[in-house]
Length: 445
Image (cartoon, rainbow, N blue to C red; front, side, top):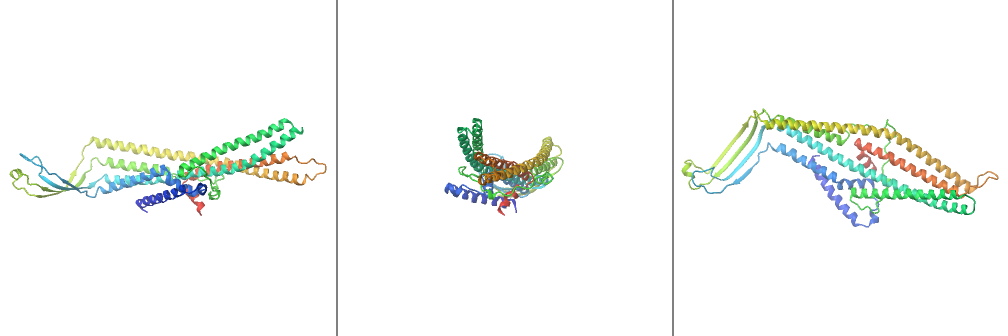
């Protein structure tokens, strides 16, 4: 697909998205409270300022490439110069003229065309990188909001158990069964649950605000759809984690394409010296018979045409030589920037691959602890319902059941946090390897 067709497709998609967004904003909030991950990504890509800026850069690079090619196409300029002359004519007595010029031969122009074409590739890579970064931003905020909402639900249940525990402990303290310290410990547990709940509510609201800014939708009532989140990538160990190459990462590819474009420009500027330049020119003039012209031009005629090719040989031009050195320095700088971007990608990827192993181990520990807490809760519930099964054994106090419920919900929340920490690193690795879009779109399958 040609670049212009891509741009038209994106612009049509933006108009459709704006219309759809307007309809969403006009509908009741209850109907817009939930939005899938893929829909949020689509809206964010149309609403993103970085994507819009990158798209404008693609349009600019497309026009710059056409400009280098159009140098070989003759231009056409019309002019009119009515006036009056007195004495000896100071110029051509032209009333109307038409001019056409074009480039015929230039040792530098092919390099400039290559530079413009490579710059367009760099702009397309930058656009892709901006789109992928937007997808990553939305995905990270979306999965964090989803995790926060699940954890808040667990904390709501935990808070209910904690309040019941406080009441039971207070009754036991008043009855002299437990000490006041035990009652204070139960109150501390309830206070810690409420503190954690307040932190999560603030974090969830921050994620809603971020998603609202990304998508252009209202933040109030923004709720995730858990089923729209694809399964987490299976990067459990260093051996299975991807090792992105520079060609996989759009940002690094854009940096190297930009450096390549700078080199072509430097080659072209260097060829401006010691090489001939040929320019075609054509001119038609309609002379006017102003009084006095026929006296000085005995062979005066109205219609005049001139065709020709101008050849220039730049034997010495200090300005052009300095320009060539400047372009070469720009190319060296761009090459260094590209190499630095590659090194940063390698370092970040190495760090994330190392973190994956640790986070996967933490996730496994959290999963096992949650399973153990569930089994312990089942055991406590069974003992309360049918007793311990041992003769003369004391019964299970009701406070123990509440503590088991609180502990089970706490380990469940810890497992959610471990899952979130792992998937954040995995999504960043997907972005680094250029696979984030495929992961987001996999939910549509």
